[in-house]
Amino acid sequence: MRIINARVSDDLKSGKALRLSLGAGGADPDGRYCVDLLELPGIDIVADLNRPLDQLPDNCATEIVTSHTLEHVQNFMPLMAEIHRIVAPGGRISIVVPHFSSGLAYSDPTHVRFFGLYSMHYFADSADQPATRSVPNFYSPIRFRVERADIVFYDWGTFVQRWFGKFMTRFWNKSMKRRHFYESRLAYFYPADELHYVLTPVKSA
Image 1 (cartoon, rainbow, N blue to C red):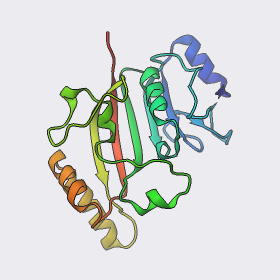
Image 2 (cartoon, one colour; image 1 turned 180 degrees about the horizontal axis):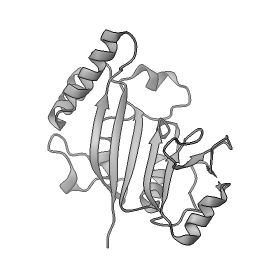
Image 3 (cartoon, rainbow, N blue to C red; image 1 turned 90 degrees about the vertical axis):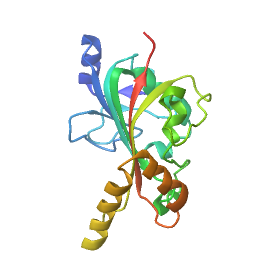
Image 4 (cartoon, helix red, strand yellow; image 1 turned 180 degrees about the vertical axis):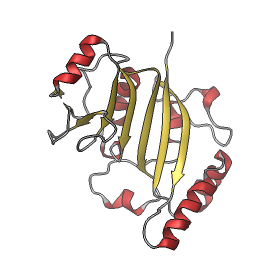
C-alpha cells in the first residue's frame, strides 16, 4: 500500500484518528480518507484490499465505510481481520454489499462472493448471535458485534416501483424475525437489492 496524501501521514504521526472509505473510487463527500486499488482523483491511499494494510497502525480509525467493494475481494477473511485491527474500540464499520438474491450480484464477472443476512454473524460471539439462527463462529478469532443487518430492496424505476421498494425495506426490517422469514422463504420470489451492515469491533482490554 502507498499513502499518497501527506495529511494521512501527518494525522497518523499526531495520533489523530482516521475515517476511511474502502474501495471509494473517488473523493468521499463526507471527508473520509479514500482507499482504492487505483490512483484515481480524490484517492488518499492506494492499496490492494487482498493484501495487509500494513502502513495503518492498530486502532488508528474510528470509522470505516465500504460500499459494493467486499464482493470483489478474494482474501475476504484476512481483510476482515485487518479491519478489526485498525478500527479502535467503539469504532463503527458500515458495509453495503449486494444481497445474494439480487441479479446484479451474479451479473458482474468481478464478483467473487455473495452475502446474506447472517454473513457477518460468523464473526460474532455466541452471546451476540440472533435468536433466529446461530451460525458457526470458529472460522476466525476476531469478533464484531453486528449492530444492524438490514435487507434493502430496489427503490428505483417508476413511482410505484420506488414506493414499493421503500415499503418492503421498512416492512421487513421491523425485526430480525421478519428478515429471517423473508430470506429463508421469499428471497427468490421477490429478490432484494442490498445488505446494509453496521459492525463494531469487540476487543479484549
